[in-house]
Image (cartoon, rainbow, N blue to C red; front, top):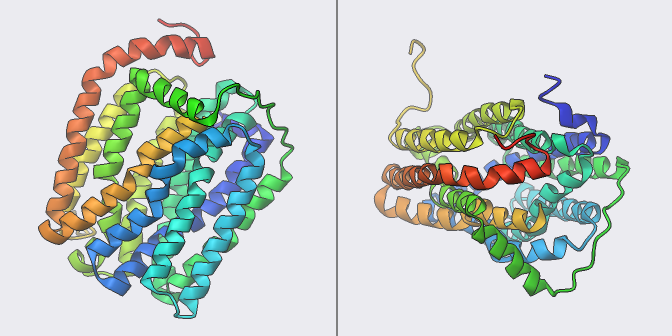
Length: 390
């Protein structure tokens, strides 16, 4: 356990970890509550897809430009401001819902505003971790712990959301989310943070943008990881958009059913995060990616045709912005595709097609893995992550 949580020895990272963990529970509650609210208001898979598309489209459009801007600024200050704006957005959604004034266009507008906040918040968070982890040998562990806390929140948040929606309505979830941002703001305020000196670039923003894109897509390991992430976000993560339909129409349940289904996916991700955090070396990560992709594709296809929700009792900034574009930026298009295809083909066949695309993408990634391994090992050695290239 001491090895698994070694990055927490850095005080600033420890504060960030705790504050982020509390806030992310509220974030997942809002994600679940928003989808359920849209489904309750419209009873339409298309509007579910469009709501997710609107909320995440800004990341696809602007994340790369934001990455260039973020690299020139104080990361601590950016995070403080994005958390305040996100808190105000949640409180606005809570007020409209609790007063029964909320409409679909308001949800779409506030979702778009949250997406604009995420354009700056997501790459900054990832880059900020690099700055506050003093011992760079623990950087990989810190990133794994970030994934761990996201998925702990993904397990707890939807479960709470389902219960709270059933008892008090969606507005209570939005209100709790707004209050949860206080934890992040407090943790940021308690840090002894000294920003790294920014070396002024002799080139303009567009040159830096082209330079970052050229580096990312000109280096096969990064390019292939970005493309695989984009594929899974486009075709795989759309299952989350369709989950309210499975909960309500397929499984004949309510908000609590939806919450438990979302929490179940969080439990699986949490197990994977623990496995990542416990690794002592980066060796073998390629095989884990391939195995995870294959398992995800098969399970997605199996879930697509499931009809019971439980069994019987006996039975860094530019690259991070490009990553955000690949992993989050493709989600809105996947949401739109999923909502539209579910409308005409049904949710089961829509997810089956997505699972096949993810499976094919994973196989292609696996075929290129040996060549990528040769290119990446010297970088690991140079950065001190590996002691030798052998």
